[in-house]
Image 1 (cartoon, helix red, strand yellow):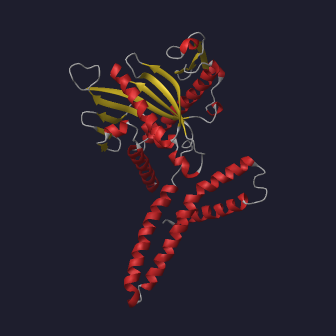
Image 2 (cartoon, helix red, strand yellow):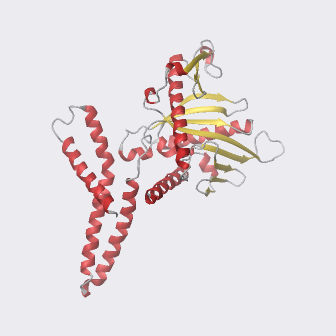
Length: 369
């Protein structure tokens, strides 16, 4: 372990001891906001400090075993203990480096999943519906909260466009953030391609269609993005589609246009114009922030291209090949022959591999500095 890393870990260990003292003080809960902040910091430091403590114990064991090697009677035992200690040190060193990687402040936030049909006409819309079902099943497995924000159904089924809000049911903070929706799904943004025989195909030919996905963290509040009232145009109109008679009798649907960027957001799935407007503003804020983030990532990628998370929405990231029963993620060259399970929401192997690759890329970037 580098001396600078060891020194930083010693500081964090001291900080956690200080937090434990502050949290156990008689007046600790007098200021609830401060108490929550301290509790969260304590939870975040827990895995780091515990791993550091285990690392120091393994280091002590290594030194003790090295000293015992000088005794001929204990040499075999010492060799065994030394090998065990060094194995633990290597594992803990990798764990500590991973835990010290820069954290994405958006990881614990709720997210918007936006799916748009692309090339392929009706088949693309059907594929958009399949992708929506895949992510909804995955969210169900994770016990996340899901809400359809806006949808534009296609005539033959599926969607021209659909936006879903996904939030974790767990309290933010600590290790739970790594399991939050945005932390797990943020690398799903990009072009998703399907190869299969469409239901509309009468000659049995395989077609290729595509959809575009955008995964965006929900801003804490609209002020975070600084949308000025004079920069947006708000139009109301009568909603179309399902919803009974009432939804078509009032101007409950809302369309917001952000004039500087040309971004347009429509929400019509709720009967309340007020709720549709509030949701549309949240989606607009998320899209503007996403656009800003992608511009920054593109600038960074000019000097060092990231393996995942480049932010390029036009990039083809994954192919779902039904005749061969395979799914391939092109960014990390991962092919799984379990397509049926994947489209049923079994995404853990894919999302886990992408997160691991991103962490490896971060470590490599730190090593280059």
